[in-house]
Image 1 (tube, helix red, strand yellow):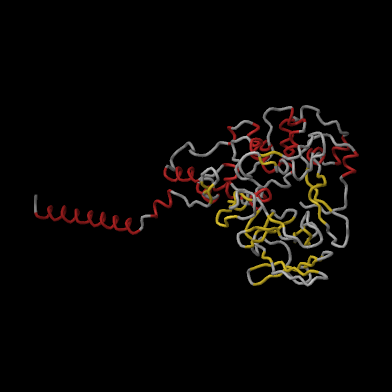
Image 2: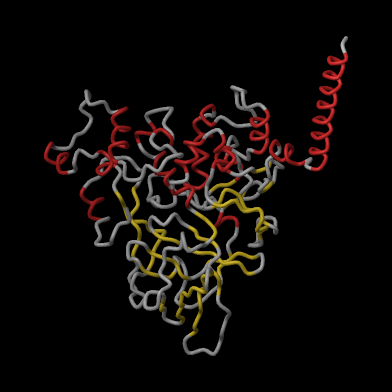
Length: 420
């Protein structure tokens, strides 16, 4: 071998050694970079030990679904309070809620927002309460939560969007009270919250609250799934992730029923956040006062009960909530889409509508408007005029699919503004 060749191999070996040493030193100084990527940050830990990675990790493989979900009321149903998502006015003249025994004034201080309390005919004073958490997507209104240390309370002032005004929060008296927010209250507005007091109190770990109803609320905590897919991006079969469409109809319904079937206030097993998709909901919780399906189920709290009382549901073994709703998309107001869903079962070739032609035309041939009308909720009542004793309610589309008569319509007519 010539001297030139020897030098070439020697220099090449030295270069390779240098690269190896540099790589070794770099990884010694930065040992976490690779491991952090393959082991996503844990945002919270479920009571069964499974870890939440956060819905943003889903975007890596499901960008379109993630982007669509950000626009849904589910995603927007809770968030840390900020100027961007607080709908009520903090401007003088529009920032007062004046009740019989107390007056609340909403004020902004730099980037923070506060509810000030003024007691009438009393010398009592209390410090202002901060707006810390927004509850509600804002379609019909918002309520607000405030932290006192690690304890969570509901503010007495809420925002009513149809009237564009501050109102007394539903269920509050006309004097000031404190309402603690426990798991049973918050469970349908956040993906997960770790209660410090075994689910009984209103003490939470602020670092283990995942706002909004996001991917992991329905698809289960996904840290293992994310770690696996990051290590094996070429894998064609997802691991450590439950396939909802493989579940029985009742278990698919239970995913929605945990929040859309009434208060579920009789806790039989675990805590309000213990239930996970794929399990039997009725083993965990039930309504303390079962309501006869043939009775009056409120349109706000028990859409599940209304749907399962419908003949459309009873006459098929496959219909569930996702038959008509895509939970990943904001479909509000898409009447054509929902009418098409009706026609998938009620073919145009079959005369299933008994209404007169003029009547169907006056309804715009809208199956939903006629057979799933908007009806007044009896569970959400607010006073739009604080000096008045008359309470107003939201009108929400019922999921009791049936033929409604004139009596049904007259009982639900009102002059109240409707949120769209």
